Image (cartoon, rainbow, N blue to C red; front, side):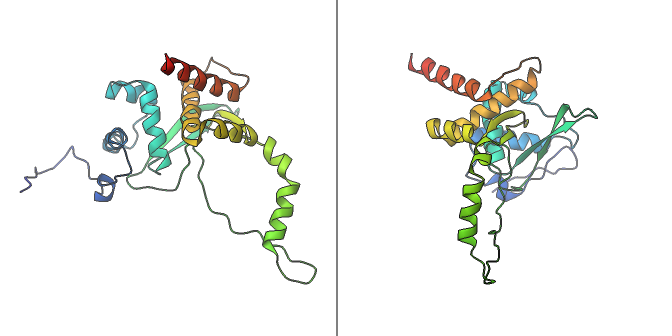
Length: 210
């Protein structure tokens, strides 16, 4: 028999589907429950959450990355009138909102691109191939702002190179760690974010090997 307490105030209602989400680690689901119990205007930060749970900030980053990848968290940077980033807003969802990658970008399915041929028929495969070949250089060198705070800048080719060397999950974690560190330390500037991420990965691997 389950004995439930009578709640009149100071309690949180959470969907059973979320409580029973076996795709979440114990640490991630504890963090999610805490965040859902906070007031709507609660100002979240990885440093503050690390203090609450008495763990390292990198541990919180890992849990946030996991929750973002499952659609429970979204982060959005806010800018002032001069176009400078001033803060980051966190949206926490009781149930998965959208499918989100570890880099903080929403992944949406695009409809196949079709164009009419001279005969009036559409050939989406041919047209997409032509478009891909035409834009391949533009794609490789297009720079994106990614990470928890959308402040890590990598070109598509740099992202692919890192992923091919170290794997999607590990690269995603280090991107969010760099993003968090730069957000917490605005005086720090890195000329090359790709080399910084790769340096951190290599250094951590060398420490583990000792």
